[in-house]
Amino acid sequence: MPISLEEVRHVARLARLELDEAEVLALQGELNALLGHFADLQDIDVSGIDPAFQAMSLQNVWAQDVIQRGFTREQALRNAPTSKGGLFVVPTIIEG
Image 1 (cartoon, one colour):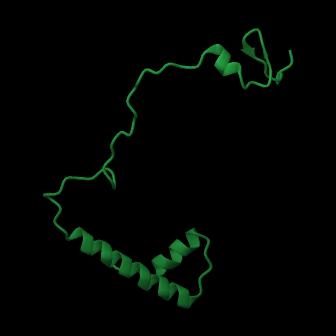
Image 2 (image 1 turned 30 degrees about the vertical axis):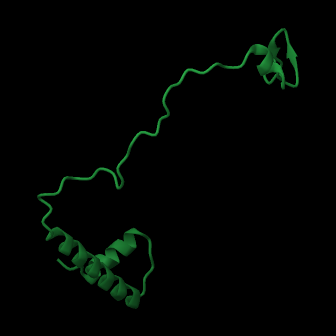
Image 3 (image 1 turned 90 degrees about the vertical axis):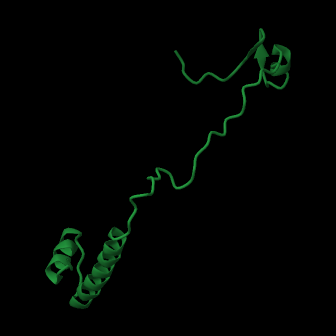
């Protein structure tokens, strides 16, 4: 079903587009060509094809959980600008 000039004008009005008559005619031709491509796609038999939910197959890329020894408190505090009583000292951001 081709798109009429009045339908193109109506859609242009809804989209608040001010088109002159040449632009309306050009847009009608482009939209009718696009609908023709969709009609061609509808004619393709896809009954034997499973639907694809992703463009590419997905797989988890998680690393294996491996238990590793962490830093000691002294190692963690070694590069801290300020520490006190074995804890990091940070600037106060909320005053009470």
